[in-house]
Image (cartoon, rainbow, N blue to C red):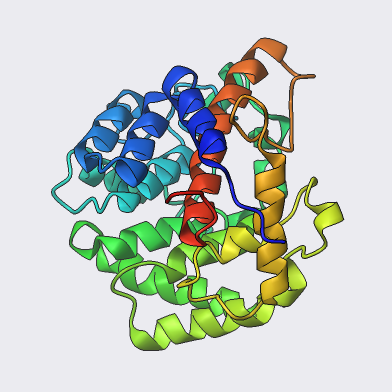
Length: 310
């Protein structure tokens, strides 16, 4: 039997957003479900941006530092793209300039976090000293996502980034093993969804990701409580370019799982924690992640017609 999120459950999620989530998730909820303004979303991002153009201040909830980081800036640009920000959007040119300045010419990659993040609470996987090892030398995460945003706004990016860096990223993807880690694959999906890719580049990336999906996505429901890609992480809507690769039964089961996993307060809980590092900081991050997950899951459920009355 197909499971649907009831209207009462949807209303509980909205109450959590209204009372406990960050303003940026509140603005995104209004944008997706209440015909809200994209300008409100952009305004909610302003407190996270620093004078250097980069974003910090917990825009990535597991990083509590105020310092700008590449991952924080990519996170903010992901949100801007969701509301169709363009090259004239306030704050966007400065964010791209920050990313260009953060490029390591020696390695041709972007360090995902700076040393300054150690001055504030953060999840253990964000440790600066271990970041290159934790994130595979940054070959995909964050490089593919950074190149995606530079490609999205080519008039604000030097040709070396919109051309040479894109070629290097795609060439590395073609050499990558069929089984990809969660965040590497998601970064390449970010690149696939970029406007302005040449058709040839789009088709090469798409073909590789479609071949990688069966080996990279966890389709066994009993394992969805742990780390790994779930079907809806990569096939977010029926119109996804990756639709049709995974069996529809896996998509349907994942939708049922989302309905079942909603908490009594209307939120969805993250399946990770770092409360053993700093309980107070984690309490804040946990609440913020619940707002993020509400948006992510409600959008997926709505896309597949799984919310009563929507």
